[in-house]
Length: 525
Image 1 (cartoon, one colour):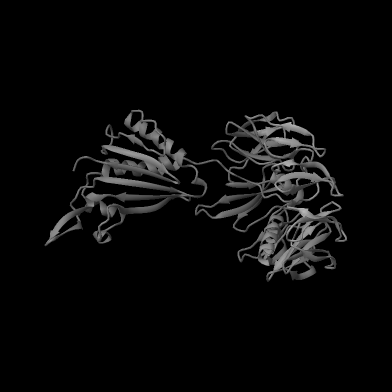
Image 2: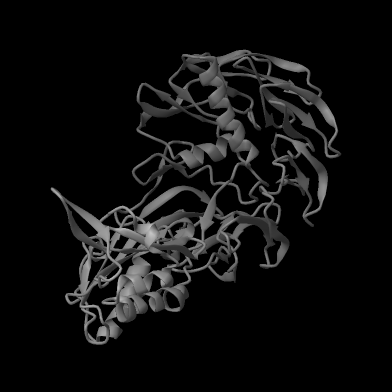
C-alpha cells in the first residue's frame, strides 16, 4: 500500500510541478461535462447537449470549448454553436484569451477569442499554453535535439531557444533545468534568479513560495531561494498558504513554517484550494474533512473530487456519478457514467496546464532536393550496372559482403533530422557456386544490379507524415512517367511504371507504419 500511495502522490506532484501561471480565463463551472455531449449546471439542469455531428472536448474556457466536426476542430459557445469554424487539425484550449491552433500542414498559430490570427510561430515544433504573458515552445536543431524558448503575446521571441528545459511561468518565474540536470528558476528575461541546485521543483505559488526537492526530500523556498521549510518530506504539494505533505505513504497538511496543521493519516488527498472541505481517502473509501482535519462527510464514496466553487462536489458511488453539498447530501443524484477528466483536473489543480500543440508543418523540399535525385540515380544509372563497379559509389567493398543474405544494405544515412534512408540491393549480387556436394552463394562482382529497395524510416515530427511523403512521391512519379499511377490504399502499395524515361522497368511504393518502401527492378541483365 505504501508504494502504491506514494506512486499516486508523485503522479499528482508531477502534475502540479509542471504547471505554469494560472489561466486568467479560468473555466466555466456552470458547464459541467457528464459524458455523451451533455453539460449540466451546478443545479443539475441540462444546459447543453451537443448534436451527433459535433464532438465537444470537455471544459469551457473564455466561453468556448474545443469541438470537432468531420475530422476538423474549432470552438463552440455555451449553446453548442460554432463561433470559430472547424478548420484546424489541432487546437488547444484558450489560456489568457489566446489559443494555439494548427491547420493541415500548418505552423502553430496564435488566435484570439474572435478567431483572428495573431501570429505564426514557424520555428516551433511544439508550443505550450500562455501563462504569465509568455508561452514556452520547443524547437529542434539540425541534429534533432530539443531546444526551449519563450514567446510573448505579440509573437516576439523573448527567450531564445537553448537546450535547457523551461516550464511554464508563474509569478514572474519559471522552473529551469541546466546542463547538469539541476533545477532552478529564471525570470522573464531568461536570467537565472535562483541557482540550479535542486533535483526537481514546482512553480512559485501566489504566496511567494515554491516546493523543491533535494536528495529525494522536499522542502519549501522563498523568492530569494532561501529555505523556509528544510527538505524533509517524501512529497509536498502547494495548497494555497498550506502544503499537502507526504511521509511514509501518509498525507496531511502543514503551513509555510512547516508546522503541522493536519497530521499525516490519509492514503490519498486532494487540495482544499479555496474550499472549506478537502476530499481524502482512508485507503478504502473517500470522504471530506474540514481545515481542522475533522471528517464532515464520512468515508463512503468510491471516488471523491474537490468541491466546485465551494458549492458541490462530484462523487462516485458504485459505478454512477452524482454531486453532494457540504453536508454530504446529494443535490444531484448519482446517474451519470462519467465526468470530463480535464474539467476535474482543472478543478483539483486550477493552475495545472501542460497542454501542448505540435506543429503540423512538414517541409517537403527534401523530397525533391535529396530523395528524388537518389531515386533517379538508382533507376537511371545503377540498375544493370556491374555490382563491383557500383560498390565505391556506396563506399563499400567486396569484403563487406562475405555472407549471403537475400537483401544487402548498401547505404544508411539521415536525409533530415527525422528521416533515415537505407538503400538495399537484392539477390543478383551473389551467384551459386558448386563445391562438392554443396552449393554455396558467393559474392559476384560481375553480376548486374537487378533491383534496389529504398527504405525511409520516419521518426520525431516526421513520424505521422508518411502519407504526405507517399502522395508527394506519387505526384512526382506521375510526372516522370507521364501517366496516372493506380490509385490504391497506401498500405497496400501502388504499382508505378517508370519505363518511359527511366531504366527501371517498374517500381513499387508502399507505406508500412512509420516506414516507406520504394523498390525498383529491371527485367534485363
